[in-house]
Image (cartoon, rainbow, N blue to C red):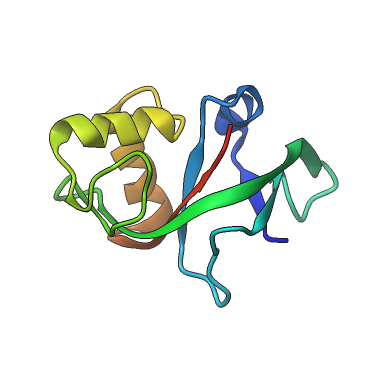
Amino acid sequence: MPALSYKDHLVSKVVDGSKPHTIRVWRRRPFREGDVLMHYTAMRTKACRKVRPDTICTAATPIEVNPFQQYVIISDGSRFYPEGRLSRQHLRALAMRDGFDCLADFLKFFAEEHGGIACGQLIEWQP
């Protein structure tokens, strides 16, 4: 059962179900469709707490986010986005569903957190 931890500013959107996915860089054991996902905040601290009941992973799609050239490329498998380089409209939808107020905030987050291109998975679940 893979665990996901969220930054404080995203917790309320995970809790109310308006954030139906997250983007994570590749890990040793990639996420898989059917995984039971556990949702936490402040993992590995004394303040760690579960923020919502477990959910089932409905898709784990390869994704590449380039915040500097402002593009996202996604493989086939997402229920929200088409395969390939996302249009500006789909980029904005991705940013909003991922819990950000606007595309600029989404791109800024990835630039600061990853310092460049982030390659990983778009992990989706039923809200």
